[in-house]
Length: 180
Image 1 (cartoon, rainbow, N blue to C red):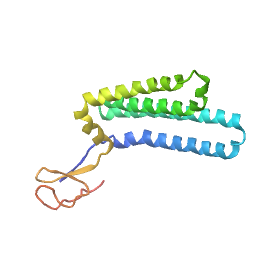
Image 2 (cartoon, one colour):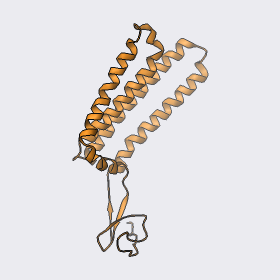
Image 3 (cartoon, rainbow, N blue to C red):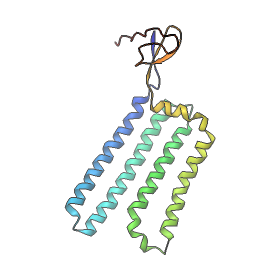
């Protein structure tokens, strides 16, 4: 029996996710410290809140760049996956900006702030909808890259999860391959 690795680039896709998670955790930590120390000084806290939100957007855009680069390597047959990731990141960036500047909406004429961000949010939503609708049949390939698991091939030819003790087709006991 031989072992097959499905989604070999899975570890490579995981790295940008972990980098973004660590960066976002540190940003949240800075925001928490700022809330505790600067909550009495309103102008300073507002400026730091805006700077932190812009930092979140920078982290999101950097994540998009790194993740899409790795996604292009691991899934060259499905370039739309990069567009999906970009659409999600752009939507999150628009929503972050919306939440950041919402306290200043009163500076614009009534309702204009909400209309502007509604239109800005519609752009990535439309792009996502368009891609997902056209390529819904290929989405399972994309998600299998993200959640890949090792397989063991039985002598009957059936691929089984590495955690299986017996073949799902013939019932033969599976032997775990020796790791070098």
